[in-house]
Image (cartoon, rainbow, N blue to C red; front, side):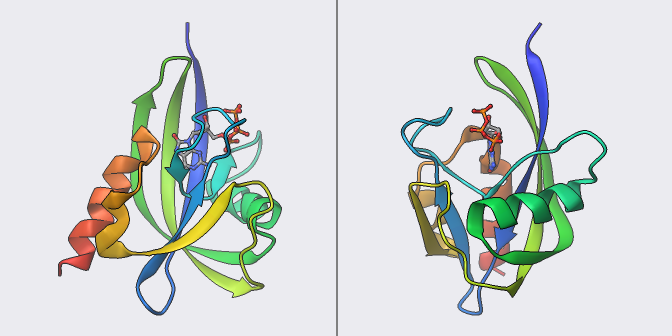
Length: 133
Ligand SMILES: Nc1nc2c([nH]c(=O)n2[C@H]2C[C@H](O)[C@@H](COP(=O)(O)OP(=O)(O)OP(=O)(O)O)O2)c(=O)[nH]1
């Protein structure tokens, strides 16, 4: 049976309505795909705790976790990912790529020009709807 993992992703928006996008490096699983910074929820962690920890590790900054955006279960070839995405606000520091190949602020209405990890598409669709309001 395929392994299931619970994953959290941070949707961080700046004042220019751009979203912080992170590029997985060539040596990661799902190489060279864009994703929301975050990672696997560890045992005994709430999704919010996990997201704050992952953002410190990956971006070297502190976020406040706000409302949930989407929950998606996506079956990859080797694993089933249950992804929860949350709006987050930076409360300390400036995002730095500690683990990713690149970080890029992308206007909401241009998000679909990047090649995303498939589990992220429903979140992208929601953000695109918001940008057209
Ligand atoms: N962090 C993050 N992971 C995502 C997203 N979308 C998506 O399918 N994933 C997948 C990639 C990984 O398989 C898993 C998250 O694990 P991770 O961020 O801890 O990745 P990892 O490379 O350390 O883990 P692994 O897959 O090599 O074991 O979820 C996303 O937006 N953010």
